[in-house]
Image 1 (spheres, rainbow, N blue to C red):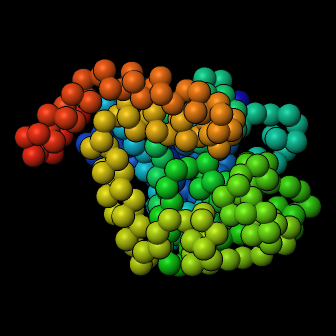
Image 2: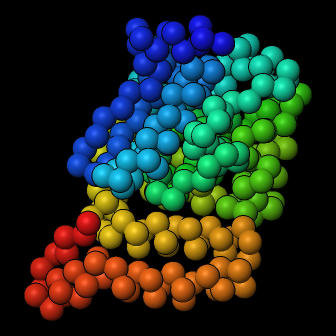
Length: 266
């Protein structure tokens, strides 16, 4: 109801900042170890939607204020809502868990530290690149609460980590560290604590310097291959590649190569 959204006037549960073409979204319930209540789920979805809708934004970095990325869902509030058939997504929004509704075409990078519990792993599985501080501590512990993950872990963990690696943690709820998360393929780079946002931004900024349509085409075709198979993605590939070759950015790409300078893509 409106009460969830009324609180937004006082202190946002997700901070937003734009740096160049990069949108930074910061989980902002540090006193609650960034546990996700309904308001925070809604506001994070709004950040993903803003990325998708604003042409000037080319990449999103999701990070967390305080010592922890998130201790998971605020089950006291979110549990009954989901059990009663409630949706975690407002219609028309982009789902940060990439399960329902609109699908984004622009890249998302996560910067994680401290507690990275349950939905943290699922947000990472739904993102494109993940940076973790060496102090990050992961768990997918739904089985320990007598429930199953419902944010995508059962759909994606085995795709990313391999069957046995995924089952090792999904079926036990055991904890694992940043080095293990990297071995599993869940995390791409481990950095010293406090450096995770800087590193994530650096990668986001590099992506934002590339031709936006080309970046989106790469993301969409790669996702299509993973989800719908080789033949479907192959069927689309050449058509998309040819249309990109006709776009302004490709001409600028060639020109910058000839002129030996960095390209300026629009």
